Amino acid sequence: MSDIQDTLIQKEAPKAAFQQIFTVWKPHLISLVIGIIFSLIALALGLTLMSSAGGKIAFAAMGMLVISSVFLKFLGGGRLLMRYVERLYTHNVMFKAIADLRVWFFARLSKGAAAGLGFRHSGDVLSRLVSDIETLDGLYLRLMLPFASSVLTFLVLIVVIGSVHLPLAICIAFLYILAGFICPLVTASMTKKHGQTLLNSVSQLRIGVLDFIHGLREIRAFGAENRMAALLDKREKKLFEKQYHQAKIVALMSFLSFISSQIAILLILAAALNIGFHGIGAAHIVVCLFLTITAFEVVVPLTKAGGLAGQIINAATRVVGVNKGHGYDVPTGSEDAPDQTDIQLNDLGFQWSAERPFVYRHLNLKIAQGERVAIIGPSGAGKSTLAALLLKVIAPQEGTITLGGKDIALLTEDSVRKKIAWLSQNTHLFDDTIRNNLLLSYPQATDTELWQALSEAAVADVVKAMPDGLDTWLGEGGIKVSGGQGRRIALARTLLSKAPILLLDEPTTGLDADTEMEFFKILNQISSDRTIILIAHRLTGTEKLDKVWRLSDSCLISEN
Image (cartoon, rainbow, N blue to C red; front, side, top):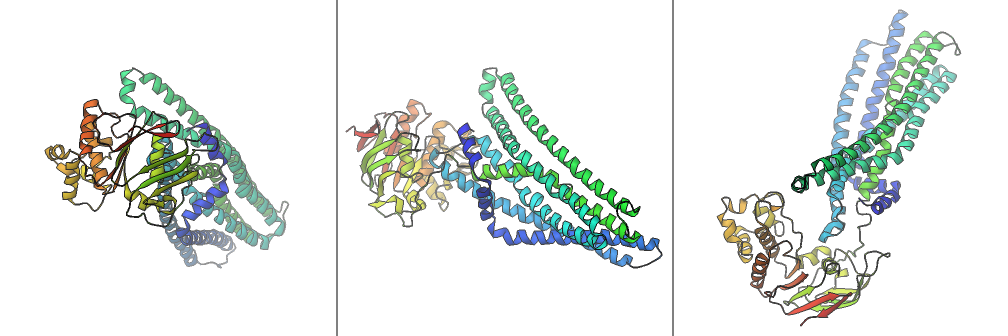
């Protein structure tokens, strides 16, 4: 991840990030509140159990039977049952909420990644998808639930001990606030900035590991195993250093929290000896002691949660800011695309950002329905940018693009993309069967339609020769077929979409000359009722085209 991306992410307001997360979790808000209620009921039963047990011991020592064993058994059983229900319910709710967040993350990522735009390191995406989103379950389970429990415990502690001895209650309350609120807040503040570097270190390690795995053949071919291993070791040590530094902060504040709890217990023992606090009966001393021990057991772990808070804050900004620097505002549109598919660019102007120069200014182009055209030009001339504009992945700052006479800004994205089938220069075949790879573009297709598409792409005979036919497993990235066969299967998937416009962006990248010429011969046989837009560096001379434009210096020059 670049420094610019990091800076943009760090500037993302945590408040806005959490607002977005709770917006995603809105369908589960009632369930989340119910989970907090269950947690408080379980806590109340636990506090009552410990206080009553202390009272029973004290009164039994004085020969009095005030609290029955049956009542204690009821409290104990109730606490056990509610704790089980609370854990089961809250974790189930959080699993659903996290699942929704992952779906939202994928949708957000696709906004910037469509048409090859906005891709970032796969290791960084994996880190956000796995580590960061999993960290966010602590927002509810490790922060919200414990905080609600600590507030209830504080109120119970003040009311019970305050009714016995107000000065003692004030002292216990101060120590409780120190252990349960101040120490966690200080820990969160100290680890917030450090949490960002910690998450980035995890991301960088994942990026390195995935690069190592993907490039293992090249690494071994050049004898670079030791150098790459040393790089991974360096990143791992950096991560361990960050984790160790954070662990020291959490350990220090946990120690202060623990000391506060021990001082609170010592104050009650001092009151039992009439040191500093006088006039408290033995029975009340035992009740207060049991209640205080239980109360501080609730809040002492909050310091560790405070250490996690810094990571949660930064995880939220990283997840919500996945497209920072890659998101582009595209008009939503509300109309369906018309039946006519003439394309026209009118005085088009586009730039990726205000700091960068315009890719185009005053660009004009007209493609009639059913025409076969090519747009050629050198790398960096803006050919793939043009494809992204036609697919409505991005929007121009100047001018308009019309489809069938209608401005695509007014059309829905889905309706535009149903009219345009796209074959990219980096076509991906999934680790699945040929059938499922083809059905990606048209899920309702029958076997007859699948074979027809494969036949049009001149790869049907190859698939029929395979033992499992359409159910042949392609492997990761289509590794079980050759590059030319994989590109033809991808073309078949594009043809299967039935879209009236075929947008082919460098479709023969990586193919040898003979395979490239064969690919275009297949393309020439595709039914003439479709509009074909070929984007390429150069032409082979075998293409059947109506018009050819060269993109140069932000202008289209006719080659006809």
